[in-house]
Image (tube, rainbow, N blue to C red; front, side, top):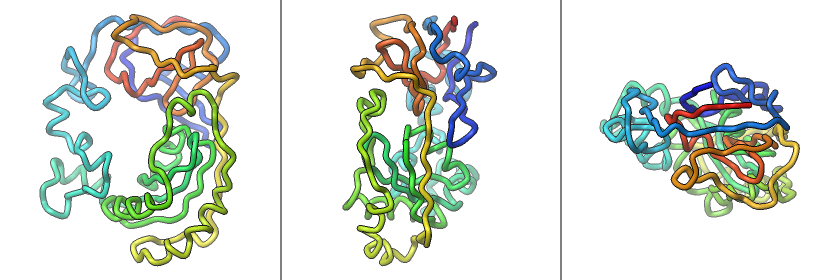
Length: 257
């Protein structure tokens, strides 16, 4: 079957079920799976045929004009809606001027993150976290970004994808990590701390991890095939290789299983 790749959809937190449109990927676990790239790429926003994608799936004009592609998406402390310079003010109101969650996660290592509260579970799964502790909320994206910057004094804000796809997760006591910095967090007026934060444990459909993190390179290979050993975050673990589906949004592939 021919498909244009999009970010895998997730349901049934905390035991994620993955799908590519109507294709239920969990049912393909431990089966042979092949993704053959046809060479065609379309912008996931305007559908224009392109030779190169930007920001995980966009043509260059859309990359330049869409608020979803602005720098402040990766660096929320740079949100500039309040300055009147948002690329799409209505989009900003819907995505930035709403409640955001601040959390600690074990995503192949301890990290701090922020996300819109209405889609927090999806975000946690997309990051491949196996443990999450929502430590508080704030009223908008800019404030959450500034809080995250402050928390970077104590925690990392990135995940090591190599450890993620090889299942090398350390043991972390998130409640203890939170307790260690709680007094400092209480000084941040914009942060509404959860008085009794709940820890979530996420179980991914993985039968086994590869020994090494060998990432699929579409510039060297036209296809990836093998046993689907698991799915974690937005990665498919196929044979001895892994592929980040979100990276290839807009690419047309022929899927066989």
